[in-house]
Image (cartoon, rainbow, N blue to C red; front, side, top):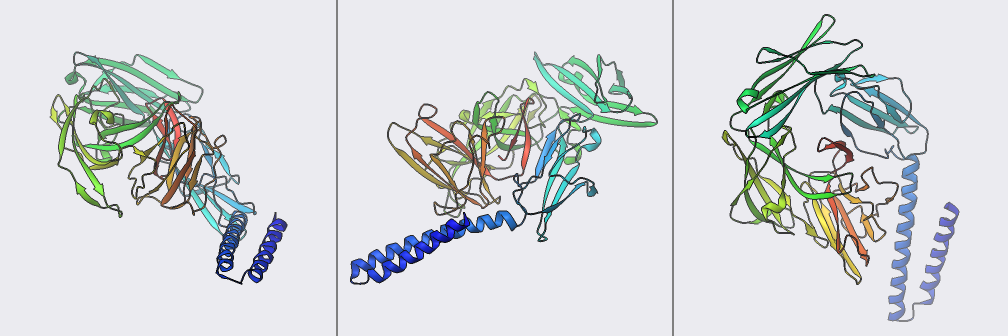
Length: 491
């Protein structure tokens, strides 16, 4: 390959010199000469870029294949694979750390032991150093989706609730469990232990909201050690909600771009310690349409208008969990627009305070240039029977990169992603087959605050259009969806 590059460069130099001597007789010749020089310069730039990329991959600072820190949300009782694989080919030294302390391991992929509750909030790090002294680090944060004491609420209708209470732990021998509600013992109706030394007890109670209120304790005694875990189930006016936007992927391939989520803003010390059982029955939204200038600042803003949305919260993971979706189609929003919204929620006890303003983009058509994509945007690519092409420039102020997430069956050679603001930026390489996850989703990320996407083609996908989700690049994380499905995601 290097011999080919040298021969090509030599030929281009000879060719440009020959043309320069032959074409100096008139203005037309000079014009042709300038065009040839521009062609030669562009070839040189392309060759230089390829050489630099090759050198960077060989002797540059170590680059991880999955380059971002990861927050891994997981259930206890299983192992987790931590991937520090990197692209560079030169000899390297790798070190691994857990909670700041080095442990002996010298491979790029590490599998943890079976996770116990003691591993919650653990931080693993890998440190890679090449023979030139260049170093890179990657961090993995382990966070559990369950605690020793957990509860699930189900609304049975007629203001009656069922509360499932679960208490468990890991131990070499079965611990002693004591469940209490309001200081009175609860007899657990089910118990279990498995081969991973995990022990659990369950019980259920049913009654109206007032009956289920109170402090629940789980006492776990292991030898001479006694640990107590507590949840306070309360009613009252719901706390101020928070608002976020997420993109939901299902194993069946269904994709919903249009959900807002709301959940309680609780002090960190109370998170998972207080549960609001009162059922949310209504959501009040205040909305404003806004227009941004080229710098991403607000230049026009509409009057505030209000909308009440009925909300049926039957299966309760509780209000303080991020599982309360609003379908944005209920808000009657215009495409190709920017809105800001704040929400209040109502339970039987009354209305909460309004959330802070949350700014978001509705669906845009390809061709839009967005200087700020906030938490993300969906581009629609309309297709027809004749040749169609479009391009969009997307940028973010909150991250060092922009990511696109597309389904593998939408991932075609007709799409080109550039690592920068226009088509002169470097092309981002990706493989539609190798890069897809278990959900058939391909993530393509830029290394700058900009991404330029270009579509050229006449194929018809998904009847008459297909969609691509874009978002600011975040730490890659394992995300639980509807308490059932897991996937790695940037958005």
